[in-house]
Image 1 (cartoon, one colour):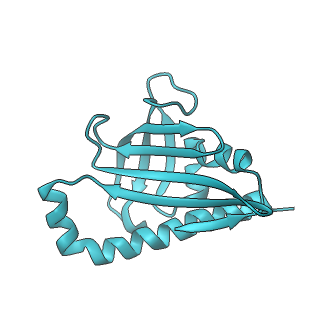
Image 2 (image 1 turned 180 degrees about the vertical axis):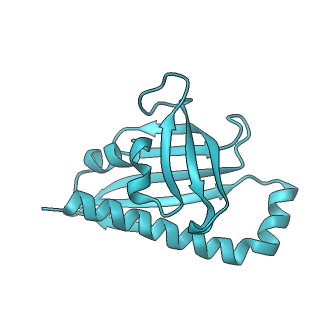
Image 3 (image 1 turned 90 degrees about the vertical axis):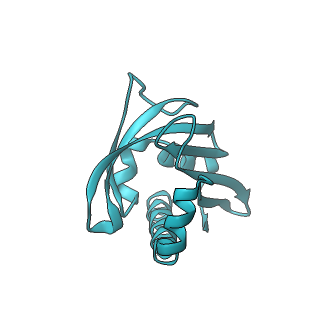
Amino acid sequence: MTVHMKASADEIWALLSDVSRIGRYSPETFEAEWLDGSTGPSVGARFRGHVKRNGIGPIYWTTCTVTACVPGREFSFGIGSADRPLNVWRYVLEPAGDGTDVTESFQLADTSLLRAYWAVFGRARGRTNRRGMQQTLDRIKAEVEAP
């Protein structure tokens, strides 16, 4: 999912890589906090997110690890084990015209359990993820483009 924002890549990256702000943008993850003494993004830094799945529940905490951290260009994190994340969420920023194109994506680990899950629930979960990515990016856009 890509959204054009009339703002610099550095300004946008500063918002989306600050996990303490995630509740302002995400329709599912309503809060997050850095772990292990981390105070900001860096590869290997861990944080936990408080998730309200599908916006209705169940509600749970999940541990995440930053997997890419290039200011103004990319921020990504894996859900679950640092060495074998179940899912990776990625933001890529590309300067474009009067601002920046911001692409959010997710990739599931290639495991038999997740393939089975996606075969049964994939269509509905895929719609939910796409809708959530659109909402997240639209909310970031509204903030960076506010007068």
